[in-house]
Image (cartoon, rainbow, N blue to C red; front, side, top):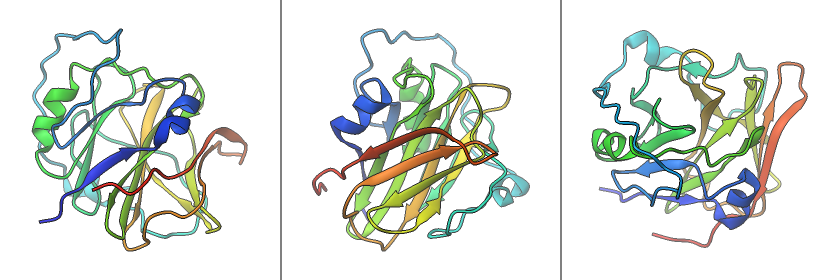
Length: 216
């Protein structure tokens, strides 16, 4: 069984995001909470499945060249959404920009993330990170924008601009997540640029970072 590790996209990416990194738990291992993190006390039950229609909605094919998109897929709190390479992503209503990416125990990752306050991204900005296992790379991050992005794209090195999948919670949370499955593409060479676009094509937020050194 493959062992996956999520690598937050370096000090530069987190500095551009305006904090110490998005509140995030990976496979049940939660990074230290920020100094101002507070436990909300809310103890909702984790959602453990999706309907067939939810799974069918918003499917993104790896490597798809960027094109017009309808915006983020709306998902229930705690719902495990498959984002490629066996990983599941879930968004939490506790805190701000609080989400998990897990390859193994999704429910445990959600439970540990409930205590994180998040809010590590400044307004109108994006965070970025990547999970690496050999030649398989999974890009993930969060956006916090006044306007909900119509699409988010990645440009990896000199490659084409490709479309990321996006998720957000119901209502107007003011934030959401994105993901891009680059299985088999190999560790990124050159700058990774992430861009959030409005429906008219204007840029809402962007982020550029250099991939972290190889780590397993």
